[in-house]
Image 1 (tube, one colour):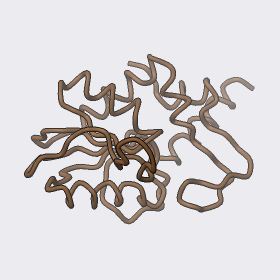
Image 2 (cartoon, one colour):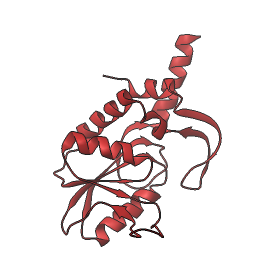
Image 3 (cartoon, one colour):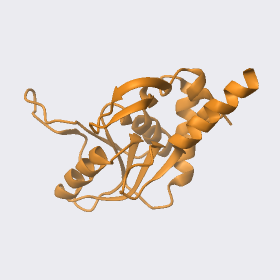
Length: 173
């Protein structure tokens, strides 16, 4: 089994500097799950860990662009369940939709996210699923920054990534 934290650090998915997160919060740490997801071994390991955490019967997977898409697609391929991808904003062209994929009355969803800070994008997806007649049974994220009040499970906590980085540095130095 791939050590996800170690591999994410090795590929440079844990970054330090001055960042504005999608939540609008400022942080000196950025976790680039999108970058990590471009490595097949990491994406596969993340997907396997997410599958282990799914303890509900569900019909479909939901994710929010862009960070959740590789995870959602991988999970869809492994489980055989359809995927619904939510846009952050409704398109002003083409079909003008806020999502790709269908939601039927009573559809039960597992929602996957790359990183959850405040949970704002997860809440937006949940509201849209419910408005269309579906319901979210479980929220799963790759990384939990430890700042959200919504209930979800994660593969990693930011604190675990930071600890893994320290361990890697001390073993190399």
